[in-house]
Image (tube, rainbow over the protein chains, first blue to last red):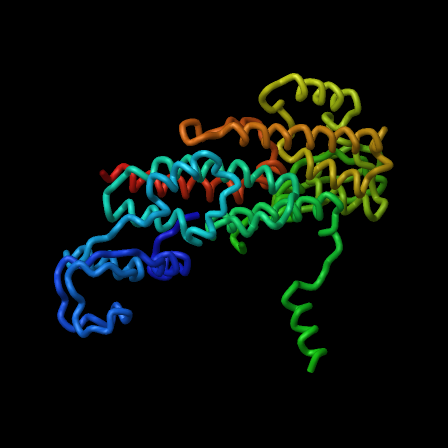
Length: 188
Length: 179
């Protein structure tokens, strides 16, 4: 699930997603933020990518303007809505939904979040179908971090159910980390 | 993952349901946390927790009377009802756990246990496909499915997925309402 918190690793990683910004005021001595230009100052109207967290901070201080990433643009959304199931969202952003939520929260621009909810539900329904039919594990390549978490939980539950039905839990076995430890000691 | 209920744990809860046994030994009774069970007399039926019944059965100290729903005819009727109905039919909340335990440890006390085992599996498959079908129908506008009378085992199958999904959608919705 989408979480937000100072210590949440997924939240931190989602904040690292690159965002295109346009500088609105020349910032003296901040040229290092855009090493490509090779200049000392960050000039007005420069367009460059910085992590989301920095973009948000610059935008609140009115030093830069966030440009809505292409992946949330209308044409991309139209492709997504046409068939949400087969498109690889991982290629667009590993934290697609998280970034969308953050951007929506920040920009107060509700245009793209409503279709994305539809896409998320459609993809979940498809995912659940895949989980219960024990399908091709290649699907994992198309999933974002959020969906992969759901997929793995689902697969774990399915595996656990079959183990339970064959009563494999009746036999007491050593815990997995003990087995792994034993292997490690054998190698030495 | 540590704070989630696993299937063996769910079975552990199911072992608290009561079951009737016919002991073949004499004992003053058992004082355990859930109460006092006894006195036990040979061939006098008595109600005990399932785990105690299975424990005694494994030592050949009693005969287990299967619960009323674990009967071939009752299950056949349930199966028919399940097939005709759109929603779930009413079953024991722990029907899978109880039947699995009894079929594993007290086979000889259950008449037609082979058929019953198969019927329960068919019933479970039917109910699983019902969950699948109702989940296939959800959309953003109509997010919720009716899972009334869902049994423990089926609940376990979706409890890790659905809440996480709904939380994520709610989270996205919250930012939508800001503007």
